[in-house]
Amino acid sequence: MAKRLYTEANVRELPAGSELVLGKEAIATPAALELAFTRGIRVKYGDGTSTPAAAAAAPADAGLKKLLGEDGEYVVTVKNGRARVFKLAAGGPLFVGEGS
Image: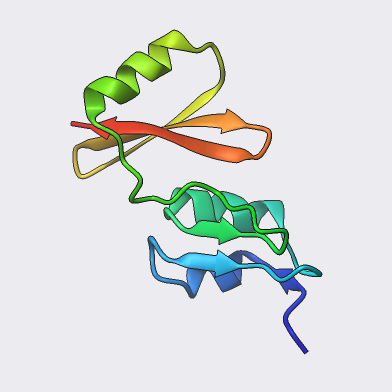
C-alpha cells in the first residue's frame, strides 16, 4: 500500500533539490510542504500538477523586474550570500529569481 501521509520527517529524509511525489490519495502536512519549499524540493501531486523546480532559475535582472512589476507576498531566502525570491500564490510558492 502506498504512503498516504507525508510529514516533516519524511521531507528531511529527501536530498535538498529533489522531488516528493504524492499519489492521488496522499497528502502532506502544511509543515512538510513548507520544509519542502525551504529545501528546494519540488512537490508533484497525483493530479499532475507540481510546485516549481528549484533549478528553474531566471536571470537575476529578469526576476527583479518581475518582482517589482507585481504586487503580492514574497518569501526571500538567503544562503551563502545568494538570495532566492519566491512569490506566494494559491498553488504554492513560485520561483521569481535569485542573485547575490
